[in-house]
Structures are given as C-alpha cells and as structure tokens.
Length: 568
Ligand code: GLC
Ligand code: CA
Image (tube, rainbow, N blue to C red; front, side, top):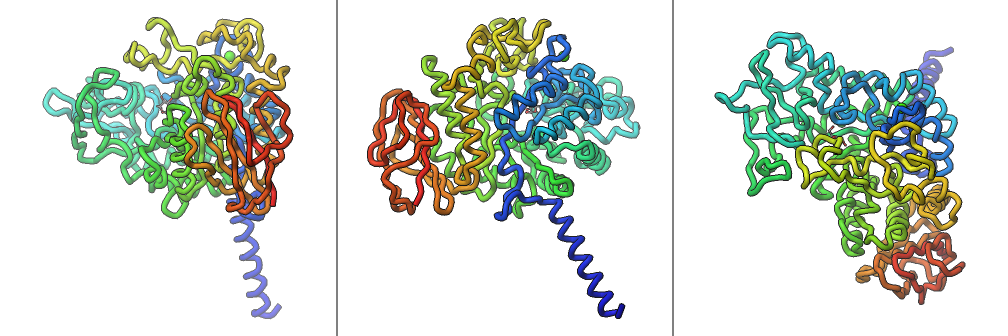
C-alpha cells in the first residue's frame, strides 16, 4: 500500500469510528434527529407503594417486575423508580446509605438485574433516582466524616464552626428548623438543606465529585437509561456562608421566611450538569431534573447554554397552574414551548398533591382527570406520569397527626400534613387493600378503591384508565402528536383551551372544555394552512357518537375533550 493510500484508509477508519461513537451517543429514532426520550412516555414509580410481592406491606422490585405487562399495555416506555437503595428511610429512601445496592426491603441486586432484563424485553427503559445533594447520616462516608476533625472524609461534607454559641448563619432547612446541626463529638456544625439525617455532600471537593460520577457509571453498566436528578438546585452553597435575606412572616414550620439566595441555584451547579451530561451521552442516557424554577427563564438555564446540560428539566410551573384556567395554561404552555428546549410535563408526583384532587371539583373529578390527561399527553414535549394517576387516584391524607409517616407532616401539622396522601398503594383491583398486598399496607388505601382500580376500569371502555390507554396509543402512532408544532387557537376563549399540533401536511386539533357549562366553538384553520371544514375524530370523551367534528360548529359537553385529525 502506498503511503498515500494508507493515510486514506486510516482517515476512513477514523471517520467511521468517530461517526459510530457519535451514533451510539445520540441514537436518534428518526431522520429528523429525535432522541428516544422525546418519543417516550415516562412513568414514575414510588416503589414502596406500587406492588408488594412478599406481603410485608411494602412494595418491592419483584412487585414492579410483575406489573411490566400492565405498564407496556398502558403505553409506557420508561419507568423512573424513586430511590430503592439501602436507606434508614427517614425520608423514605431519599436518605441513601449505599449508592450501589438495593435496600433489602425492596429486594436484591439480582432482583434489580432481573427487572432490568424483563423491562428490556418489554422495551421499557429504567431511570434511577440520583440523590446527589446529600447522603444519609448512616452512609459510611458520613460516619467517617463525623468521627474526627482530621478523618479522611471530613471534607466530604460541610463542617463549620458556630458563631459563638449560635449556628454559622441563618439558613433554615426546607423541612423545618435550622439547616445546621451541632455534632458534639467534634464541636462543629454540619449543614443539611433537608433533614438532619441528610447531610449535604461537599460538591466543591473533587473526591466527592469523582465518587458520585462513579456511581452513575456503575448504574449505566447495569443497564439503566438515565437518572432523575434529585434537588439539583441545592448542590452548592455560598463559600462565605452569607446570611439569607429574611422576609416577613413565618413559614409552615414556624421558621422565619427566607429568600434562599445563598444556598440554592448557585451557578456552579451548571458545570456539574455539563460533566454529568458528557457521561450520560456516552451511555445514550437521559438526565431528568427536579428543577423548581420561578419562571421559564430560570428553567431555560437547565437545558444549558449550548443544550449541553439536562435534556429533560421538569417544568413544575405547569403544576403551579392551580385551577382549570385556559388563559393560565395557555400562558404557561406558550412560555415553555418557546424556551428553546424540549418541554417536560408533569401533573403530579410523590411530593405534590395528586392532580385528581387539585383540579377536581368534587363532582366531575373523573371527567376532569380525563381532561387533564388529554391536555398534557397531547402537548409538544415528554410527559412524566405518576403511578395511579391513570386510574384517577385521589390523595388519602392522614386525619390525625399520630398517623402521619412523612416527618414534615408531623413538624408542620396541621398546616403541612406531609406527603403520605399522594403516596398510598396503587389500586389494582377490588380485593382487600386493592390487591397491593395481602399484609398490612404501609399506608392506608382509600375506600374509593372498590371502584377506582385497574381491574374494574379495564372493563369500562370510558374509564379514566381507558382514556389514558387510548391517548397513549394515539400519541405513539400520530406523527403530529409526536413531533408537530404547538399552535395556540382561539386565544381569547376563557373556557375552552384549543390548539393545533401541526406536522407538515397533517395536524391534530385538541379542544378542551375546562368549564362546567356546555360550550360551542368554531375554528378557522386556513391561516394555519388547513382550509378543511371538518376534522376526523380521533378521541372524544363526549357521550354522543361523533365521528366527524364540524370546525364551524363544535358543541362540547362540560369538561369534555375533542381530539380530531385535519389534513390539507
Ligand atoms: C426531592 C424529593 C423529595 C425529597 C427531597 C430530599 O425533593 O423529590 O421527596 O424529600 O428531594 O431528598
Ligand atoms: Ca415487600
């Protein structure tokens, strides 16, 4: 071979090698470069409450494995499992004492591997929860750290001297009380944004950074498809420990209100997110952020200036729209839609009162649950469902302080009842404890389980569950719903929220009556390039048979949904 030819061969091999690495990093699912997570429907599982396989009253990994057929037939592509690592369970798993294992209460690593394998055969990906801001105080790292001022891991956490007999500064924990706890053995305070049993890791220490990155690699090797990053806002604190500005009044725990200026959302977090993204890209993985932001500008920053941070920061501003208000939803959807990244919608999760209760009027709750599903499952973006939402599960809040399991509910009672209400067992059927366990469930099942359960709803074609199944089936096969633009329609309508999802020559019209009154609407879609006079019905929750929707005169029942296809 001539030198020239050898050089050419080497160059071709180099390019081939390069493009195959790039390929494995991005693995787009279509010619337009969409990624797997843009077409996937995610589903959050709170493992304590999903399915109990050994009847100890607590859900477990084998329980999840036994429900993969259900999840697949519902239309789920990825499950996010909230922490199932070894933990003293002070914060029900968000206090991790070993990042590379499974808590015996949930099973073993072998159970996890089996779940992973079985999920794979169902084409369901697994997302783990990465609790990166803090560990448990029972983690060997913290046990070492607190053992002496000179211990090897002392600087893995945030130790500081007090100011005289007081804490280093005025920061309060978001779960109540000072964010500083005095450790008498070494005479210094350690910092915790959450419970005292959740000491903050010191992310300025490169050893912490490396150890935590190794954790992500360890799980990627086991086959996980990404992480939901817990409490990303809280990774860094002001090195000078300046006092936070105090605001008027007291919070629900009786502490002074503060602006979390010096202990949340520090810019340093973005460098960590960029590094995590590099490792995620090497593994075709996705990073989802628990991103509590005050506006869309703040949310935007989590995508990264060069789209090199989180692929999926959750838009919690959507959950802050606290009533069925078309103008408010319109505003919020438009804001996140134009933020430049791929929107991520959630209705509720293990920290938020269930959407069934938040939007329900007490009389039409199931209709409203279908309405809300039709909204966030037809928007441009990826939805993350919360287990039980698909059957219209309600909150089951504790009635007495002594029944509360979530510690914040005891500290904040009665103003803050804690998060037990939205974490109750999944309702599978009408047998005792809703088929979740044959033991005593760790949280009580509400009586409504007799009718609100998977088995009963599967039999009823118009149930909330079947509306979810139909919506998800539609979403998976309809190009306009997957990739189409979002175009707001009839923007002055105060009762009916309508929009078009427009993709090339096809479009889907979504019409949501958010009012308790019948409504009449009409659409002129010519300016959007669709002069059609009628739509072909894809899904409706209205009682009457309607195969075609007249665009000049569409009658809507209270809280009803109409979804139809229009073409050029
Ligand atoms: C996140 C979790 C929440 C937990 C907290 C502390 O907000 O979603 O459940 O209590 O972080 O880890
Ligand atoms: Ca169990």
